[in-house]
Each structure stands twice: as structure tokens, then as C-alpha cells.
Length: 278
Image (tube, rainbow, N blue to C red; front, side, top):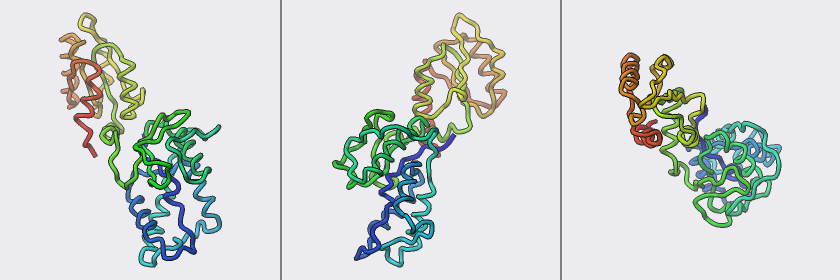
């Protein structure tokens, strides 16, 4: 499971003209700041666009119009960003979606952003789009895609800027390498979908041991529990003996049995417990 990321506008990396005078100090300082934001990733098409624009200057790249005192840091930042490429699950194909507000950079860059966003949306890890205000016809909190997916992505105009859903990303990081086991009640497609959409919990990493107050659970299924699991018990939909069996198993493995009243409480409880986790 890869970490959540922010898609990088390729124009953030597009260097100024070598003939620019005075030197483009602001551009290179800004690039260094963007490189320090570890969330940023170029999409595969945006990466290819930047390489085409570099032409013969690649791979022996030297930052053009850069003050000598910044040159080393600028090149390092540029190379680092250029090397952060998100893997799309499938190659982007078809017509690029329309972006709203309108992207005012080159059409090739706009198409790359649209197709990369569409290709990466299914990963469940794409959080937002990092860009500069001047690259859009108007300032907006988010960019919308027609046709989706995604429906929309928040726009980040400052390196390290806060995101809607930043707490969700920290929960996702906490859950890396862990399974969620839910004991009690009937399996809820809405809860499983929310776990995937918000925290990237795949169906393979979520086990639901069905039980109701007047229907005994298959207690042998508790043998699937392991010490790294995150265990939830739906207290409103389980018999006391089944609850006691689950608690005994958790004590044996040294795992906390988290109790919630109904299935829909699981997502909010995960967020409350782990949205500040590193």
C-alpha cells in the first residue's frame, strides 16, 4: 500500500528561459520549497511532458537563470521532484477531461494533469493537486473534472499546505500493514466502502465476523485474529457470550477490543483515535 500523495502540476518544474535577466530567484526558491513537501508526486504523463520540454538539457540539467548561490540546492530540488513519479494502475487513454476552473498553461500540460488524475483516482491515494495560482483562470479551492473520475480535487497553492482529509491520510498511514476485524452485526457495504474511500482499507484487509444478538457467531472464526489487527466489536448487535469470546481472544493476543454501538461508528472512531498519527 503506497502512501497518500498530492499530484504535482508540471509547470512547477518547468524552468525559466536561460536568457531571463535578472535571474529567476523567486522561481527557484519556490521550487526548493515545493521539493520539501514530501507529499508531491508527478503523474506519468506530466513527467513525460517535463522531460520533453527539457529536451537536450536532460539529463545534464543545470538550473537556468538561477543565482549561483542557489544553483546546487535548486538542481537537487529539481532532480528530486522529477524523480517522484506516481505509478498509474493502467495507462491513461482516451480524451482528457475538461478542468474547471480552466488551466491556462500549455494544452499538453493540462491534458497530462487531467489524464494523470483520472488514472490515479482509483488508487485511493490521490489527495489533491499542487499548483500555482497563476496557472488557473481563477482562484478556486478545488478543480472539477468532466467527465470524472475524480469528481474534484482540492487545490494546494502553498508547499506543505493543509488539505481537507489530512486527518484521513494520517489514519491511512496508521493502518498500513494492519487489518481491521469487525465482530458483530451484519456486513455493511457502506462501512466497507467508507473504509476504502477514506483510509484505503482494501477488502482483503477487512474481515467481518457476522453475529447478531439472537444468532450465535462462528467463534472458530476468531482464530483469524493476530496481534497487529485493529478489532471492533458492534455491541448493539452481538450476544454477550460472543462478545466475551471476542474479548478473551483479544486479551490472549494483547489486542485492544474497541467497542462501538453501531457499524457506522467505526469510521468516526478510527478518525478520532488516529487522525494525528505519524
